[in-house]
Image: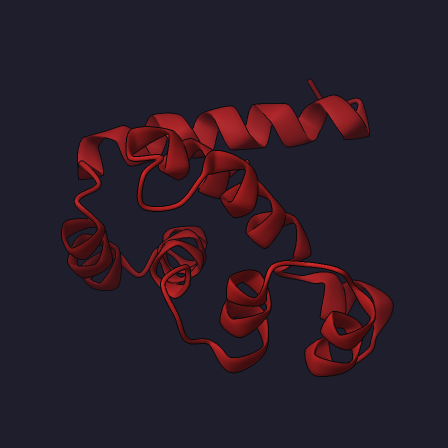
Length: 110
């Protein structure tokens, strides 16, 4: 959800739906205990999503990296990537809050 919200800022760069999919699959390898490359071979996803998830490259990697850096509290990297993506840093806490709130609706922890 966090990635999707980032996409809402500039949908010409990457559509929010593509970024939502990127975020949703970003931890699938850990969830099902399989290599990301193997999982991506089996799924009909856009190549740019697969490229970011498998090879950690491409036009979507910045969004994935920003989400990962933010979750880990790696603030210098957050600042650097947010600037590169033209994402106002001041919006990130609200996006993260919204994403956590959205995720909690599935766990009953609202």
